[in-house]
Image 1: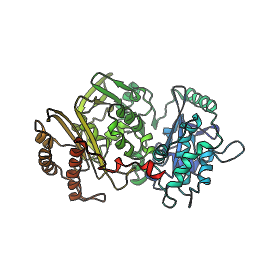
Image 2: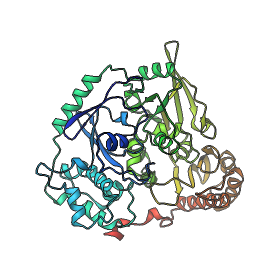
Image 3: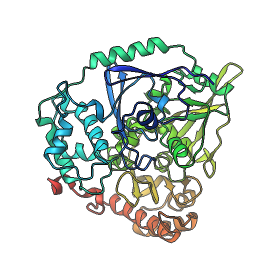
Image 4: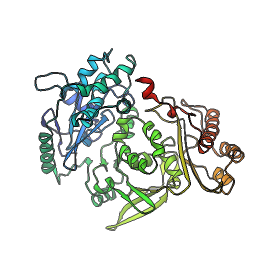
Length: 491
């Protein structure tokens, strides 16, 4: 099939590429077509960060910067955006960019393979902080490189570089030039019909395309689809990308619930959720790494239907519903389903071929609500859970008036633990009732043994995490890693 050219802004000019396959990754385009080999292929599944690049897009008249994994980002998703790789950072006289010089000055590179990825993550942080005259804290630095791995240097000198790069002479991007170029690309390609990679800008167009092309692969960030392409060797001749649909980028607040557009990135979604429940911040920061949260979407994480997706246990515990939308005989139809009823089997959902997941409805906090979520994984961040347990209770006079429990990693689907909930509802909230519920919880779940954890270990974790929840509800602190002050330790 012929396709509309792929256009993006890089190295101070607009790049035009023809005949780029729908499932070609951005990393392949950068290395094979543009010969920008500073961007490395490491894990090829979004885990190591060696392929990190920075994307710029127009947001309310200015540039919004995101560091992403180019290995699992599809090339056409960069259409109409700006891209920076490590080759683009030197100043006009070819001096090192402050984020590069800071790494050199702090001896923060050894073998160097991972260094370009670290540079780009720090460059994104630099644009968000240093270029605006703001200082970088150690916690800012830790979060910014949470998607980057180094096997030989250790992270202290890298963090030292991050907090010191703002002290060097500022190098600014000519944002007006970039904005002008991106607007010209939009004007040049608006209305263009890409027959293999569809980028609809509104919901009506998305639904129309979906009704005509039910077999085309839907993508919403590609953090999973990119892995399918690279690791499972799946091929997709035609793709529908939902991330440009305006309606799916919206956040709406109602008296009793929050409506999140399914196209919002995980970072945007979590930022909104933490406004109401700041106690969940540590969990949000542990969800994958910064680069994954900047590209992956809340709708994509849900619709992917992985039994170890971390957003679903939390959203189930909060009582969330999903909205499925379709076009039927020219009329837009909506279907609302409780999230725990959305899954019909391993990586299967009840979504119909002509439907699209459009919104997630999350109830707002109520009085006497106590919500926590716990994630256990081999790495502290940028890793998949062995078990993820989310619990939300409401009490009145020390009795439980409402309870919801969501769990990941213990069944073929994300699970709502209804039996455990029933055992607590109406009971006094005390250690005896908690102990009884732990027994029921272990009988209700049927995890498998795999490379992340054995069945028995997962069941043991459920009991320990439930007990931790009880302790926290009683005011205990300093009972988990998140309670530690790592910034103080490392400074």
